[in-house]
Every structure is written in structure tokens, then in C-alpha cells.
Image (tube, rainbow, N blue to C red; front, side, top):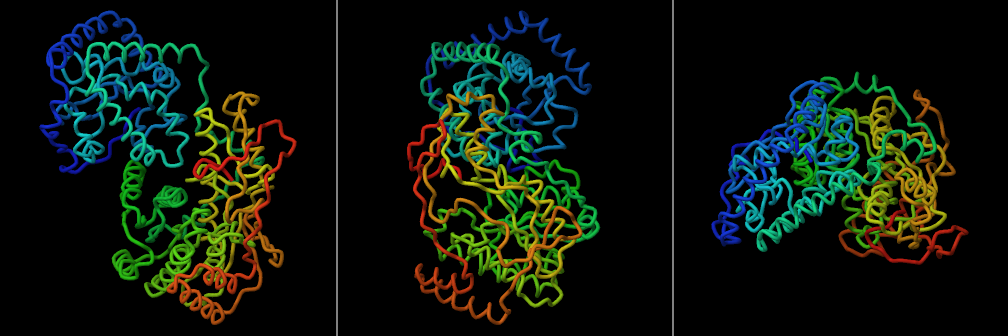
Length: 618
């Protein structure tokens, strides 16, 4: 997998030397001399024997895509010494400047020839030269870019005790790494937090058991994996292309002309909160293309902001972006942000959204989703902000969850707020395909691992949209929305989750008869079906035919403030029962539902009731 390395500081490039205690993981003749002799012999043999194939691949790469034949990138080698790894180029010319730092399955920048070379690992063959000159070994830990190595723990730096390898136990275990990353809602986060630590652990185990037998076994296992790849048909990527999204949604994707948003954002300072999340990061990617004077990307999660910064480094006009780690509820920090950046517009995507978890953390949900929003609105108004767009949810309609109730209060806070120069608009979203914790990546991961697909209920339905649609809606709502309005995208009919799962099985070329679907039961706070509008709301068309305005009765600002003060008192007291009662005073439609039991619904799939806290889809 190619890494597109962002600009590094001197501190990051100076990855240093691993701890001396870690450098002598394995002593003995083979580790000191035999392994290097074997590397030289096999590298010379490989370069000579494979010379015709290497020349043929080089010619085809040059003829089919132009540009350089080899992809050269700085990686960290033995004892922390950097070197340039060599691969056949598998991506289009200039790909590094057009995309993100992690390459995943289905990446549009990979050429047709590149997909073939990657599938059979032929793009790695030039690394035989790295082996011959002593920069690499045939077998060893796969080398990483300096920005990742700089974050290794003392124990993890033990992998730098030996030369990195063309293959290794980590490479064999993660043969389908690109597919794994394609299934993740945040590929960079999945790689840094899950895959890379596991690979380093495997590499350390290998070094502790280093032997000629282990190396030969690893080489043989690598060749077997290549042969298996040759025998099986190409597997579709877990990253669904646009055409598959159309089939999953049962409607055409909504395309919105953003000329109005561009006209308003050009040469203005814009703040995106929750910028490291699925919606926030997509907002940042799209806004930066609208030529703002400054884009401030803010999130309370430092690691997420670092990933976002690396991801955006290669995008056009990304030099206008600033990255800030702060809590939106921190009045002092937000005042400093406004004073320093002269914010004109805000897109507020920061919120606690994990529905089941918030049922047992009511006070935290209210603090973050209600009172942090209240503080941000006041700070924005005092700072001269001209427009504020709140990312809401269809779960705010007749809410059955704490999260939905807090989102509804957020809508009311914007709708009832007197306009004193700042235009406030709320945008109601359905479920976003591919977002963190959403149904599609969960089902993709279960399909990849051959597990039963876990769905909460056979009759569960949801409204869906893509992240691109969601962000386009937010941007268009910003352009056309009047103060106090709640705008909703035309999302077609709700989609039955079990039908979506069947489509994913088929689109992924999996055997429908061999894939079981298990219904786990609705979790606390969940409904069988979400709604887009309250019964009492009047649905009106807007200047954009795909966007509707929901108009209904709103409490007065004075009445709402009294309710919020009572709610604040309950938060301070920390009583969940009183908190829920205070939520119902502001949102009388908020009702905790009785969960329906799961019964067989006539499907052919087995329906054992499971209790999977993390791997279930609603």
C-alpha cells in the first residue's frame, strides 16, 4: 500500500535510533550473517531471472500512463536510517496531490495496470534492488514512512533492529489491507489505531523467533497468497462506487449546484466544528474547493485533527486551512478562535451521536449537544458571525432517544433565537452511508470476515444519503435558508435494512444462500422507522427543488430559555430521571418506546437473537 507522505518537520524526520535494548532482539549466526547472505543470493537470482518481466512491466507502465516508471518514497529502515523504497508506479501521474495519505481498495487514482500489479504484488519487485544494496531484506517488518515511525512506542521501535522486508508476517496477515481500509469509515484512523499496532506486534513476534526456517516459511506463504489471488476472480472492493450507492438507496443521487454557496463563501472565514468526523471532514473537503479566505477545522480530538491535516495536505487550496484542537463549549477558547480568525460563517457538526451509549450518559449528552451549542451560539453572535448552520438529524423528529431529544432542542434553539445579525439555519439529515458507526461499513466488515450480518430488527427502516449529498445540502441550506428555518433533503422512501443487506451481499459477489442474517433486537433509544417531519409541520418547497422547509409551531425565546435553565439545573444535579423529564418539558414528543420483540418474519435467513454490543447495524 502506498503512503502519501505529508510535509514533515525536522523532529518528525529525525525518527532517531531505537533503544539499544531493543536492537538485539535476536542474536546468532543467521541473524548476524546468514540472513544477509541469503538476501544477496536470492536478490541477485531474482533480478536476473525476472529481468524480462521487470523490463516488460516497466515498458507497459511507461506506455499506458506516461510519467515515471518507479514510485520512490522515503521509508525508515534499520536503526532508524531513512531510505527510498522502489515500486512500480500503480497510480496516475500526480495522484499524490489529488488524494489522501492512505490508499484503499477501489481508489480511483489507481490505474487499470496498477490494479493488476497490486493484486499479484508485482509492483513490489523493484525492491529486490533495495535488498541487494542492503536497505531491505527479503523477509522482515514492512517499512513505514517517518511520520508514523515518529509515533512508535519504545517497544514498537524494536522493529527497527533489523532491515525491513519486502514481505513479512505482518504483510501476510494483512494481505487484504486495502480492502480492510476501504470498509472503514475513517481509513486513516483505522490504520493508525488498529492495523499498524497489530502489524508491529506481529513483526516483534517474528523478530523474537527469527530463523532461516521462519523466513522460508514466510516466503512460501507469500507465494501461496499470490497463487490464491491468481485463482480467484477479482473481488469487488468494499468501497462502493457511485453506481452501487444508487442501487443501495433505490434512487438517483441528488446533485446540487453550489454556485450560491461559492458566491457567499469566497474570500470569507469559515469555521467547521466536529471537523474530524465523517460529516465534518467532508464539509472541510468541499468548502476548501469554494475558495474561502480561511477555513478553520476544529475538533476536540487531537488525533482526528492530525489525520484531517494530513488528509487535506494534498488538496488544492488547502493552504487556507487552519487546524485547531478545542472544545466548542469552552467559551475562552472559542472567543480566541473568533478573535484570531474573524469567523464569518459556522457549520456546526460537533455533537455526541452514539445513540445507545448516550442513553446511559444523559447528562453528558445534554452538556455537549445542548449547552455547548448554546455557548457557541452566544460566542458566535458576540464575535460578529453572519450565519450559523446546525447539522441536525431525522432522529430529532418524535425522538425516542436522548440524542434525538437533544438534537430537537438544538433545532428549537436556532428557530426561536431572535435574529441580531446572525442568520441561523438547521439541516435535518438521514443516516449517512459510510459514516462512522453506520450500517454500511459494519455490514461490509462482517461480510469480509464471513460473519453473520447483524441487524436489529427485520422491519427496521432508515432514510439514507451519501456524505456528499449531506454536505451539499448543508452548503445549499447555508446559501438559501432564512433565519430559523429547518431544511430537509428529498431522500426518497425509507430503505429496509434487511433489503440493503441483501443488496450488499449481491454487489459484493457473496453467496446469498451462504450468508446468514441475525436479528439482534432494537437497542435502547432506537425506533423501527425514522421520520423526516412532525405531523404538525407544514412542508414547503424552497428555491432548490430537492430541498424542503419544515415549518411548524416554535416556542417563544423566553419560554425556551426557562426550559433550558430548568434543564441546566438537572444537569448540575446529575439525576437522569429528572433530566429526561426536563427534556420532555421542552420536547413533549420525546417518548421512550417499548422495544418490540424480534420474531421470524418469513425470511429464509436464520434469526438467532444475539447481543453484539459493537457489531450490529440498525
